[in-house]
Length: 256
Image 1: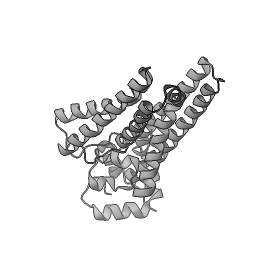
Image 2 (image 1 turned 90 degrees about the vertical axis):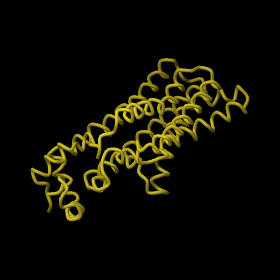
Image 3 (image 1 turned 90 degrees about the horizontal axis):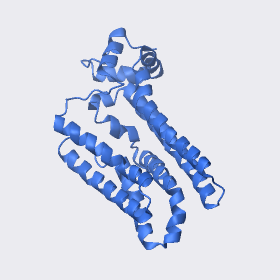
Image 4 (image 1 turned 60 degrees about the horizontal axis):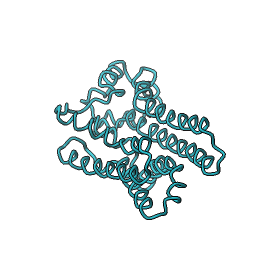
């Protein structure tokens, strides 16, 4: 049975499995651009909550999704990110692109009946895209996230692979659950059985799942894996994988 030594544990902790150290520090311009892209990437969701006019909202969201997709490609060419296109960008672009076409081609009343299910399309689309990428292309959602924070050899470390699998499962389950709650909320609304209070409660529950999911995936779970208990769990759970990684990377500070 393999276990991490104290020095290996300290190296992983200092390197920050929780903070996912970058292989090289990016220029300030890249960091600002990345922050802007993050805000732009989520802006379609903000527009869907803030803008009341259906056609204006969906058109604006589709435009924001297209801009994020294109600018992410430019950022990739600049060396700011290791992978493009992003799964989330594809999901936003396809979802809001289709909905925008429907909004401008269908009667207004029909569009009004679709809108209560908007979050079903958004979060169900996320779940479908993440699941399809994993099932069809063996591409896990968190692979794309981690690629920008660890080196190629660190990406193959059992601890990082464990985080990728568990967090992808968490995010896939979370978006699926959000879509189910949104479907209940939408069904109650179109059948006239919803109240304003119940609608708000379900909406808060839905977005609380998003907040909890992101907190666990990006902070709590990596923090746990970086702890002494987490490192021992990795060593006990993946003894052969740890031994193989150490043999392939004997000079790396994560090796033991």
